[in-house]
Length: 129
Picture 1 (cartoon, one colour):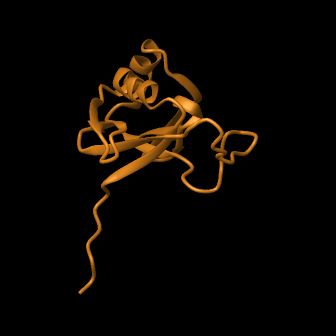
Picture 2 (picture 1 turned 135 degrees about the horizontal axis):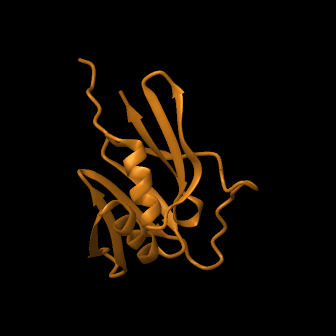
């Protein structure tokens, strides 16, 4: 029997998990979920229409290797599909999002853009038609 896989969540490492959660709330109306780890440490995650983003703290002195453009080996970006990219981009700009790639048609039926999230997290926005 072949397993069936379902996307469940994304992990983000952050020096300021609360600020990261607030960004996703402000930009994407994500629900902030605050809880406590079994060791008593506070935890903050966000949920957007069934997509969970788990935000883990990076403490002072922890070295997370990154390249000169903020990219590293591992997760490059994650994508959020929208119905109308131009309208979405206008709303995100109104909310203060920084676009590193403005909406562009990459091929027939696919329009994409990228915004810079907290701590240089790359977030792709895409429209498929």
